[in-house]
Image (cartoon, rainbow, N blue to C red; front, side, top):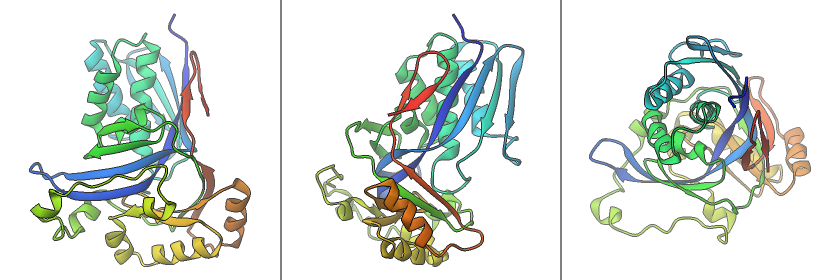
Length: 294
């Protein structure tokens, strides 16, 4: 029986590791990235019925041409159904922050609609639709830490990878992912280098070897405060610090929530800085109306 409403969490993510291996013939970049979902999440409510796709969002400016509506249109087309759903999005993840909020919202839309209407599309088909919406969207279909390759769309779930506690800091600037990749110096990605086998990170490697992001060289050059934030997090007791994705969010890694909370109090915070304590979390979809964290 179709439920009257369904509520899903759309988690943020961190890139614990991001290597750019080179540019592909199609102009996209070949990546290896290790991503982990977070307890920080948007909340999406889906109510079936009526005509068309009716979308509302708690954050102004996200009403037009957003990924949630695009994902819904794509799902209804693939399922061969006439659109009829109300979608309400509560935003908690900052926009253009390197945390994957829009991609996660799109994945939650695909998963939610599929569940509402009796799972007519297989996981492989949802993955295909997700890839058409954005490189990060397939990752969010799985809800666990995963090693992603290709442009980020080939997903290998790592459900047993450790979930740390984090202190996230965003200095209040929006960074365009397209701009960052456009500015990235790929001179070192010569053909001999591309032919070398790259060993991806694993759970048994030291944290400092895992925490790598090739995009930092671009974003920190434009926004030097990001480097200062990384240094501040390490002085405040973080085991390591890194920028997530194309930025500008920087995160510190901690063994406990108490340590992360203490560091948040010790960190000199600017007036426009957004600061959150959270933890890595694998999301479990519940039958019926909601979801919970593992």
